[in-house]
Length: 78
Image (cartoon, rainbow, N blue to C red; front, side):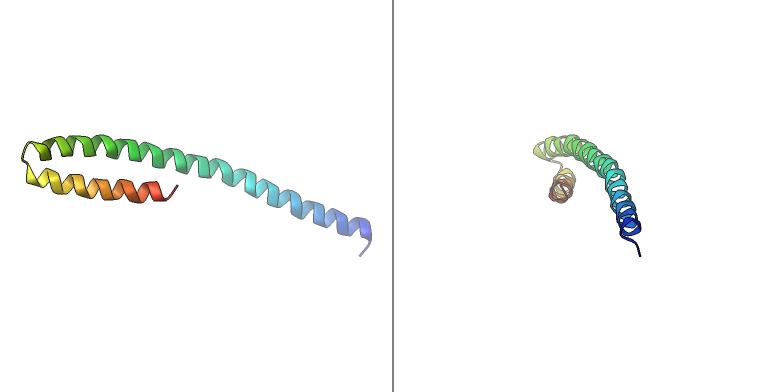
């Protein structure tokens, strides 16, 4: 194989890997955005459940605890 052909093949491989990395970054950004939006939604729900728990609704206490665990897991994914 000639040297120029070898460099051409290597160049194509490097470019194609760069394109794959570039396309995966927006996907990672979208996933992070969705995760942050879900965390914000769960935090609002947690707050409502905690208020109900403080008013004596025991089922709300259990739900607040469950939501807190879910938020913790989502934050670890960052």
